[in-house]
Image 1 (cartoon, rainbow, N blue to C red):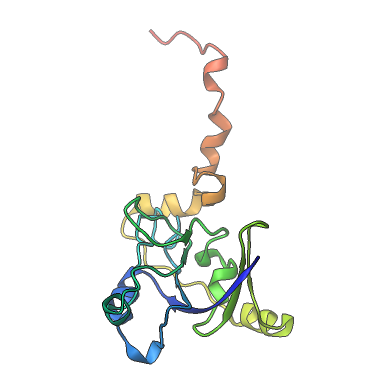
Image 2 (image 1 turned 180 degrees about the vertical axis):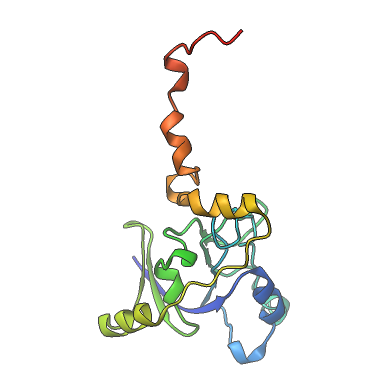
Length: 176
C-alpha cells in the first residue's frame, strides 16, 4: 500500500546540516527528508551525501530514522529507509527540482513511483519558474565531466565513452 508523508527539502548536505534542527521545519515522525543537488551534475559526482538522520529532538524521543530521498548516493552505514539515485536529477530539472517543503508525497514501492500530490497546474507553474542552479565548475575537468555525464539510472557513465564498451572485440593495429 502506498504511503504518504510531508516532505522537508534541503538544498544539498550543507543546507541539511545547517537546518535539520530548525524547529520552524516542524519535522515529525511522519516526515520524509529530501536532499537535492547531490547527483552527478549537481554535486558533482554523486557523492555519498544523502545520509540523513532526524533532528536531535526526535532522536532524543527515540525516533532514530526517517525516510530519505535524494538524487545522489548514500553510504551503507545509513539506517534510514531510502530512495536514492533519483533520476533525472534535480540539477537537470527532474521532479525533485520542483518539490517544496510541506508538499505531500505518495511513495509506492511496488510501482517504483514517488508522486507529489499537487495539481497538474501547480506542477506546470513550478516547472516554468524553475532555473538551473549548480555550483560553479572548479576545474576544466569538472566542466568536461558535467557536460558529458549521464544519469545515475544509466550508470553515471561519460556518455561518449559508452561507444567504446566493446573495443576489445576487434584487435586494433599493432602499435609496437
